Image (cartoon, rainbow, N blue to C red; front, side, top):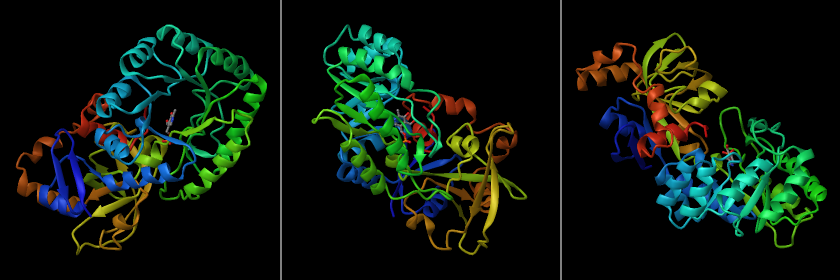
Length: 420
Ligand SMILES: Cc1ncc(COP(=O)(O)O)c(C=O)c1O
């Protein structure tokens, strides 16, 4: 298997046939992101061929320009952008892409730049204030696609998106009627929460959509079912995506909407999860706790703050023992918060080559501490400088990485976390 490897802090692109080959050849000091373009292309083609409508990629899931180009080449033409930085990034990377600004709370300046400079015509909103903002920023434009976001339950999802956004049922009718007046195409959107573990989540949300359409008595042109399409992780085995598509198609067909209405979706995780994995180095072992060189303030936010159990594999020399053991991890900063409880079960690579078989996972590779120290001593006499307790890439670096266009850092920061 061929990997493209992007180093933190540099933009070098390397190709290696395995994670083992990479650490043997390069002995990386910093965390390394491995990317698998073919896996993202396969996921994109699956959505393009099987989802019964238009698939938009939710860029926040991983805004790597390389990934954007892979998705574009695989037929994804629409992109859900959630900030002006994402608008600029996608406009620069894929000049012909259709951009949809799907964050319900935007700066007026951002709407204006998106509309006038980048040709964005599609916006979401969940209040009258936001509607007025859009109308002002676009100077009453007549060519807008405006989607009203409904609040729906996240009960069936692993990460809730129910509290922050979405119009309440009692406000929806008035908002839909007002938005109809201001839009060329009127849509309704929602998000059932990320990693929705059953298709029923979408059926429930569609009932909200039905009630809203009936209450407002308006013609609706677009139904956007958002993201939430799950990937497989340890302890989380969702039904096949086809079952989600079937439920969405059936419930969409039963809605009282315009015969020409369009169905959209906005997957983030489902298109990007298989794209990348991360090699981290074990700096220290204390019983069943491993001190690694990435964590809560870097690419492993979900593992620390949401308790996500990424699949992990220990990269060791072939003769090493490969007993299955439950570990927790500490990241590189000085905070107790920088802790990933797991449990993460580590296996030696030679026990089954799991990396090659399990294609649906974000994967964390660990380097064995003994091996690392041996390699390190041989290659880097300055090792001692890093034992002063300073994080190699703590908060400052993670913040700097947020949306500032550094491709290498962005890839690592966003591929395994879900901020934005
Ligand atoms: C508006 C919107 N659309 C799509 C997504 C992507 O969700 P997922 O990664 O669960 O598919 C998100 C995630 O936060 C979102 O906020």
